[in-house]
Every structure is written in structure tokens, then in C-alpha cells.
Amino acid sequence: MRWQRWAIPASGVPVLAFLAWGLTRDPHTIPSPLPGKPAPDFALQSITGDSFRLKDLRGQVVLVNFWASWCLACRGEHPVLVDAAKRYRDQGLRVVGVVYEDSRDNARAWIAERGGDWPNVLDVGSHTAIKYGLFGVPETFFIGHDGRILYKQIGPLDQEVIDRWVPKLLHAAPGTGGGNGAAAPADSFAEGRSAGHVRVSPEFPTTRGTTRLK
Image (cartoon, rainbow, N blue to C red):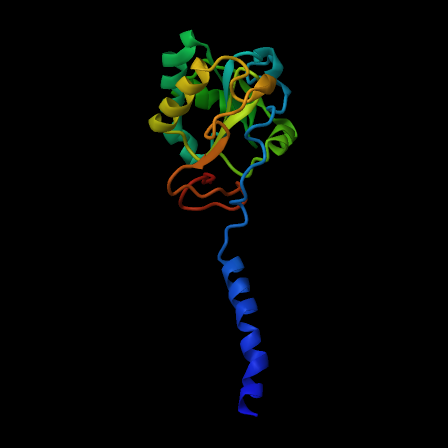
């Protein structure tokens, strides 16, 4: 019968459609499991040669910013970090930079040129980046009083992101982000992406987002 000749090919249409949809998906858009969980600790050497340990800032609001001197998007967000550090320092905000796949000399020259008086540590071997599930730079993790990551920003920070999340964390009492048995607000644990930003590793340059300079 004529319909039988079409039965098998037609049955494959949904499968082909699903495969085609899958091929158009960005495999790196899987949400991070870290928001809502304790920030992985790290003990690293700063670009000035001092020792630094994240857990020493426990009880304070911390922005952990992964960056590199070869990252174009990092250049764009840096003034936002400088401003945030100045505006919110007296309220308890601490900024920590983690230098990703870059040298001490490059990082020191970059900071000397653009400013930033917060600790910047060298992630030799990218072990800390692996702990944080980093795929590219910049990425920033907003850590609350209880040491948990409440928000992750993929791509460069802007003023809107800072002004939305930093005051929220600074004004929250320790434990109100879900710690100590308290229920977390619905928007406490989240992940956001900068418009137009493409996450790539330095081995795969792109004309947008994270681009490695030649």
C-alpha cells in the first residue's frame, strides 16, 4: 500500500528535527550548579607575591572576578569594577581578581595601567578556574556573607548588574540567602549573561566577547 512506503521515512522526521535542534544549541549554555552553593576556597599567590586565601574574607560580600590581560571584554568591564570597589568598600564589599591563563608580568602591567587596589591572584594550572567551572573570561561570582555564591555573571559586568546585586548582598543579614535554615528568596541564586557575549576559551578567538589578542 502507498501509505506503507511513507510510514518509515515519516517516522524519522521527529528524530531528525530533534537532532537538528540539538546541533543549533550552544553546548556551553548549561546553567552553572554553583549559585546557591559555597564558593570553592582557594589559596593562591597574588601578583605582588603575597599569599591570599578566600576563606579569610568569610563573612564579607566578595566579588571573585576571573580576568586576563589578553581579554578585550575584561578591558570594558574594568572601570565598572574600579567604581564598585570605591563606592561599596566602606559598606563591606571586597573584590578579588583571579588571573586566568596569563603571566604575572602581564597582569601587573595591566593593573598598573588601569588601576585596581584589590588582590589579584595567579591561578597557575587553572585549578581554581576548574573548581568554578570557568569556560572563558570574564566571569564574576557574587558571594554573600555566608560564603555562598548567590549570583554568577557570564561576560563583562555593567553598572546595572553591580547596582542590582551588590546592595542586595550587602544589606542582607548573614544567613538570609538561605543559610542557617532560612528560606532563600526566589531570585537569590541566579546566573546571568551579558548581552552579545560569547564564552570562548583563549584557544578559540572570536570577534565578540572573550578575544585573545595576538
